[in-house]
Amino acid sequence: MTSSALVLGNALAAGSDGFQAPGLGEFYPTPLATFSLLGVDFEITRITLGLWIATLLLIGFLVAAVRRPQIVPGKLQFIGESGYSLVRDGIARDVVGPRGLPFAPFLGSLFFFILANNMMSIIPLAQISPMSKFAFPLVLAMICWVLYIWVGIREQGAGRYFKDILFLPGVPKPMYILVTPIEILQNFIVRPFTLAVRLFANMFAGHMLLVVFSLGAVYLLSRDNFSLIFGPISALMAIVMTFFELLVIFLQAYVFTVLMGTYLNGSIESEH
Image (cartoon, rainbow, N blue to C red; front, side):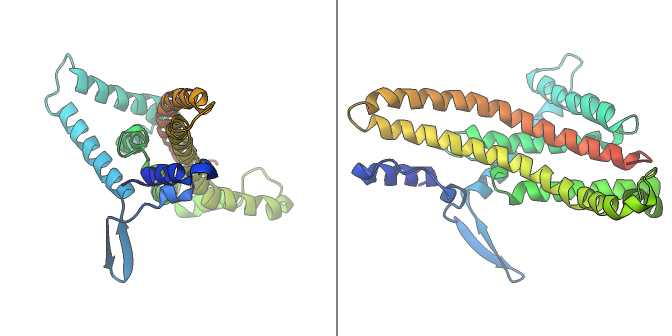
């Protein structure tokens, strides 16, 4: 039984106590399996399973899309090429810059991976995106942060790269007391943190809205009096929010990738 079903069962069992809104327990489902590796405890939950399924489906889709390429593309090839062209031309070329095309495969993989996992939030039986657990977008943000730093060192050299971060060109020397800590905070802490939080917060909020309206509709339809009027309204809002969530799913995958593109552009350019 999923955590949403448990919340619904508790809400219906509450009777006169009223509807019990879902809480953080939605994001901590009962483990399907547990094990230890090198002294570290791991849990396999339905969210972990959703991540694996989304990744496998993504790999299957991409393999099928490029397996037999044709001059006149079929549906799968067209969708795959359109998505990759969006990232290659709209982000790698336009955002990163003329030297951004070598990063197109990484940015494309990032975009498709986030998109596939975000889609799990509206897939029946899954109904939650792994990206609504902060650990998953945080790992992606750390990967992007390491690449961002490595590219800057490779392109400009370690000395020049860190010198430009610590001592911005054109800034009066006395101002370095104020500017340098801000630049360190921005480049090494704020950027990866905000990159992760933006994706996490949107998927977290989207899941909670869908759960509240969906379970609220079922609960209201099981009550008497005016609940029979407000129940269909709640059900309609659940449908509306599903389409809105679909927009957020694509938008957040694109925004995350665009921001990574801007960070790469800052690493490649000689000035920050």
